[in-house]
Image 1 (cartoon, rainbow, N blue to C red):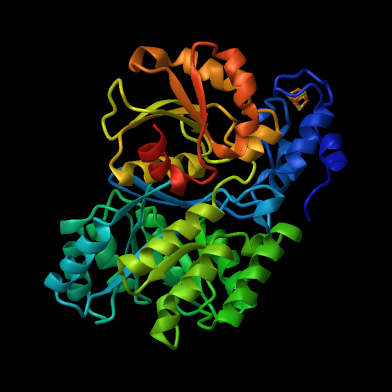
Image 2: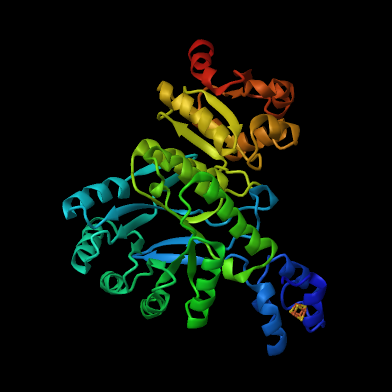
Length: 446
Ligand code: SF4
């Protein structure tokens, strides 16, 4: 059971020495109970208390990371059921599955397409995370050839899939020095797979049809000394998968049930109908997979999944922002217009993309509005005449143009009078309310 803040406080030294960075032991205890700090921050806890507190200080969902050649995919460490309660921390890794029954050339072609796929979304580069290789042929030679084919093209982290320890061992030998995920240990092979995981420093996914079966395996493997475990509940239908993933997360978070306190792996490609793969993958992103293995790669299905993942795994308390400053669009010169907006990413990209795609040059002044959109920032007092004037002066916009004329977003036309007072030698113009109307406004009015 999780300990309350008061129960934790009773186990602390109660000297209020502040070495942990908190003013009192009680304050530290409350943070520890909320799993917002680590026990190691207090250097004065005795061994007995440490043993009792270890449960309270461990994250309810263990952090498991896969590594290779500078890449890392992390899953787990989540502390809430719903993103709005706090945030989700580690984006689920998206992997593409190859089977060793495909020829090495086919594998290389598929890996190259997925490995090179990148999209820019609100200023961030989004990409897939790695590849899963399945020993469908059940022969070590074919499995090894498939892994080698993947590694000739990509150095992203790997998931290796085989229930046969001998075949898995052959694959692991090829990725020594990396940290792959092995799938999967079951009731029959768990000991041999656990030994391999320890020997190669790999994470290990346990496979069972029931929660009891999964919990039984994680307990046994933890006793064997394997810490980095992943749960493979094997559900292939949307309803069953949703129910199992939710139960696992609830038991880990609300009941502090350690045997299920691990990330989940999902295989949307195992669905009865291939068309359901994207739907199952979207569900797995939202609730609550840590690793997702797709059978198919296509830009038109990868893009929405990457964007969905990005949106769900951003901190709702921290808006996505761009750096305040003056942005040059289409190589502006001294005659180009000066536009102004806020530093909320979606606002910035709406304006910048519309102007850029029109081919018209412009200077875009981005003010620090603490990541809020134009109207929200205005209502919150973060986008007012004083701030706009300060940005124009700080970024020396006057030195860049021959005509001192700035275009306000139409939604804040009310600021034009105040801005004239702040910038007496500038002409203040009110632009359109919507970014999409900016190109026509620039052509007709400036
Ligand atoms: S470092 Fe430990 S003993 Fe000191 S105030 Fe923090 S919790 Fe209390």
